[in-house]
Length: 184
View 1 (cartoon, rainbow, N blue to C red):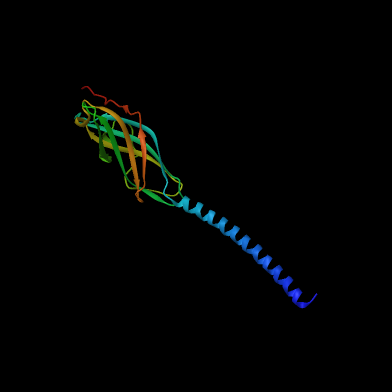
View 2: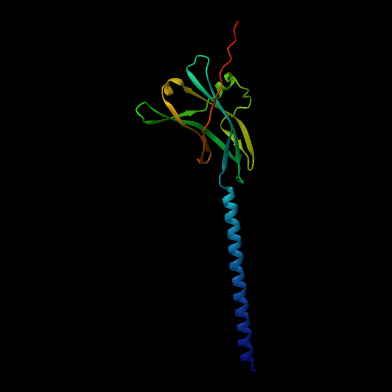
């Protein structure tokens, strides 16, 4: 065996080792990419709302319907977030069978007049840290004349976070709370 043959054999071994290291490098790079993609996915905003209780009553003047919703919201992502706003959308059917929707903004001021203990109101905007859950009451005031004589066919609360991502919570049942009258 000559030195040229030995050099050829060593070159072939070195080439095969280089190929093995490059295949391992590709495998390791793909694994690192998958881990990075999973981490990136966990950074995306992910608020999960949950309805605990829902009720409504009429105000003292009987002009407005006041909705109160006890809500729990979880931040399932690895990054902090905040709820920027919450809107109640009420869909109703008119006498001509047309579907109409009304969008109502939160109104914390009516919470104190609600006849049920609602001592933890959400004051929006509210910060929710990563993997944290907050709960509180959301209040909405709707003019009663809008719905008079119409069937309400749907209610939903749409939460918007600081990234503009929206999460909707469908409300199927709402309990009516009657105000107690005090006779003097």
